[in-house]
Length: 133
Image (tube, rainbow, N blue to C red; front, side, top):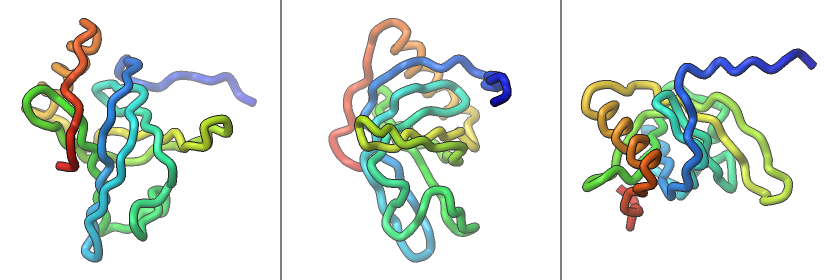
């Protein structure tokens, strides 16, 4: 095995956030609950039970399929488009850990994500999502 080299551009922060992962395609629009375990300005590590949302497999990408991660962020949820980068099965918990990168984050979304991370560093957790957005 080759030496591991961390290529992340942004520092990761351990969090425990309930969130939703949404899959949008011409045929369907489905969401599943996920847990965000690590968060950075560039992406996140999430835990979910299956690598499938509705009829879509997360790592068999079709051009017309878009994925979004919705997380609590102050007064209103924050929804960010994501790309899947890796996955691993946690044999103890029987859940998949999945790495996502935020594909289009700028402007107001970027500022709101920075605010969520800044608050976590201060020990302030956002209000939980009560339902899908």
